[in-house]
Picture 1 (spheres, helix red, strand yellow):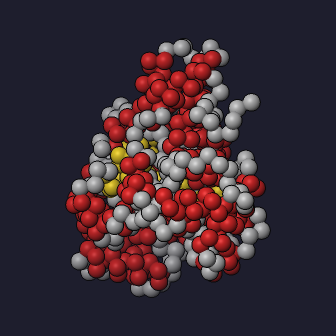
Picture 2 (tube, rainbow, N blue to C red):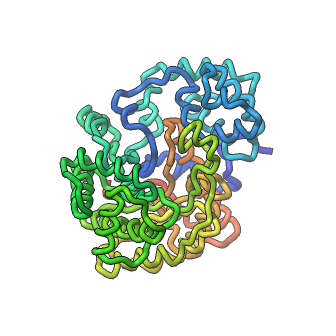
Picture 3 (spheres, helix red, strand yellow):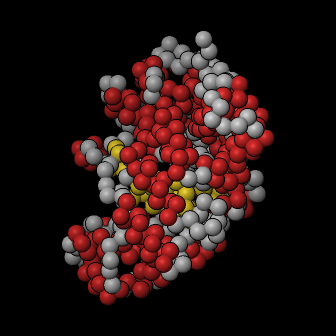
Length: 466
């Protein structure tokens, strides 16, 4: 019987162990999609206690605590920080077989070097030990990034963001590249006229352009896109339910924009056409700069209207959705490809039923100009657990080239989430190791080791030109 979370955790045979320890374990990290707050990195924040760095904003843990019967007071409410942590610690034993159980103890091992099991009894000692360590330089935001061997961080930023913190980080000479990612979803969110118009006004102010027509809107967005590029940005990102790819004319889009700027609500088809047009414009901008466009598809967000009204969006009430995927993705990629303006693209699905859909779709638009120009993104959100990652890796292996995969990212707001890369690498090495042991792959550890190193780090470095 193996010990829990020993050095060969998840690794089921000697080949997997060799691939992991000799090739994957010490590779650097490129976190090409995350939600780390750049202001914390700029000021090199030291977190006051373990609750601040571990529970604040973590809706994975919040959902588990609610499911375990914990009162909201101890989740997002006014309870003191230690009381919140105590309630989380009491919940942890109930998370067995949920990835939270693995992540929790992996994050205690690295960086805190704590191998004790977290529960209600051990909570106080672990809280005090970690809180003391968090006051040390190696456990500041920058210290934690260095401990994790992170080389590049790509944050997620709105076009109206000043990026002042990114500039401050760069000017400070910090050895980790912290780059902005352009997420312009609010510039196409025309479902609510008032919110959209308020956003457009802010966009115009930041871009110093009075936005009175659709061309002005595109000019303002282009101005911000240019600014992000000047600040080192190389990626865009969209967190949307599905790709929008309705046919439209320029005249229709101009009229739709004029209508909503006049404060009038749009019809459902007008909304779809406007979003479709905006995605094409964003795609053209990305292609012109050699950027990579990312699409995180399939989340059904903010389902609990009562709690969202109380706490706001993105507080743990989202789920996997079911949306039309195949035809819109095909039409969208084809429109860009037909004018030779299809940028490098990563598509992430949240519904596992779409694994084979995405796995086959990417092959339609790879053109030999770049290795795996159209990429099947790693399992994310509800799928960034062992089974979800195995399903994604197996689908990509069966339908494309696993050897060209860009590997893992954190998609996290926490500076303690980097053991997720280790989790992914162990899962990857175990799958390959089992194939070797079963005689399904040759025992060529030189090539397989290089493949593991490439997926862990080198592929992303080359693909994004970091």
